[in-house]
Length: 143
Length: 92
Figure 1: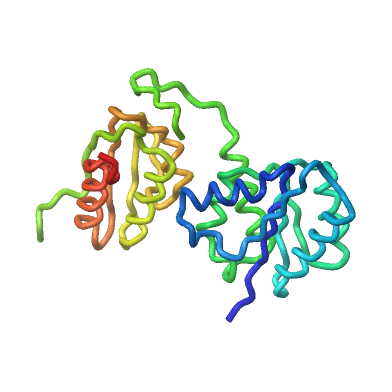
Figure 2: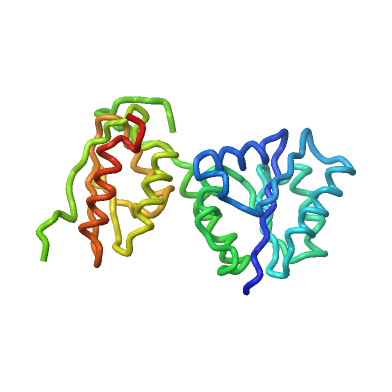
């Protein structure tokens, strides 16, 4: 059996666990099994840096770990970067719900770390758009 | 050879439209079929097996969507998808 690419989500405040919960609310509670979410609160602390280290180590089955961060360059992102020497990781910024929906549809045992990163980058890029207006459609305000 | 349809235009009837959980339900159903299934609205066609694609159609209540299935089980696939949409994704 192939080893699975690990995934760690890192977000400020409580956004990592909230975003994961939101994705499961859409897709079902059994979706995104094994994805680790780390809430960074206000930013880097020694305890948080240690939790990033532990999470990446726990997710690393030998196929590498994709780390999805909300804000590139912020201290939680720097925590992940500091793990790059210890583990095969790729870090992708701009974590959003579309990326998690995409992730849920991918068999992480059947892709490489590089291909997984590329697929989620693509999903993220496609999701950040200005909507075309649909004047004939009733507005609901619900996504 | 049956003459059952494999394509048609269907109105979105539930209040929330083709929202995220409805899209997840539709995609889950579409993926049970071998056939390729497409949804189209206002010139944009997407793969009905992709949640992000389906959401891109931004179908609200009262809009219509063109459903098209191609493949060995196209008739069953179209009928099932059409039924789900017509029944408001179980939200009526």
